[in-house]
Amino acid sequence: MPENARPNAPLLDEQLCFALYSTGLAMNKVYRKLLRKLDLTYPQYLVMLVLWERDGLTVSDIGARLFLDSATLTPLLKRLETAGLLRRSRSSADERQVLVALTDAGRAMAAQARAIQEQVFCATACAPHELGAIKQQLDLLRARLAASA
Image (cartoon, rainbow, N blue to C red; front, side, top):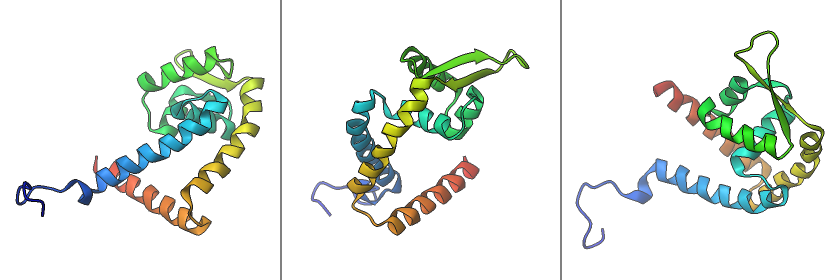
């Protein structure tokens, strides 16, 4: 124990939350570098991933998928719309709902984004089975934490 350490004080390097936080920072740093080519931020990239998977969702559907509220999501969507990657429109069935659809430019960007996944995989220096196991553990941890929140 370091000379100036307090007995019984929690240690930073023993905290799961810090391991998750610092790993997230490292992952975001890798993505930031790669996403510059697409002129996207990481949160914008996540929105695009959701829409590439299934186009024409409501704002609330996207928010649920990304665990984001509409106050956080709306500015992201506005910037993506200004960039010409998506369109937002009111639902004709329910005016309270805003539908989000990719533009041709937004759909075309998906091909460029595929290469990013390969580069992130290489940056991890992990085998596919290792990454699969890590992701499975994180998904389980997130579900358990969400149930306790």
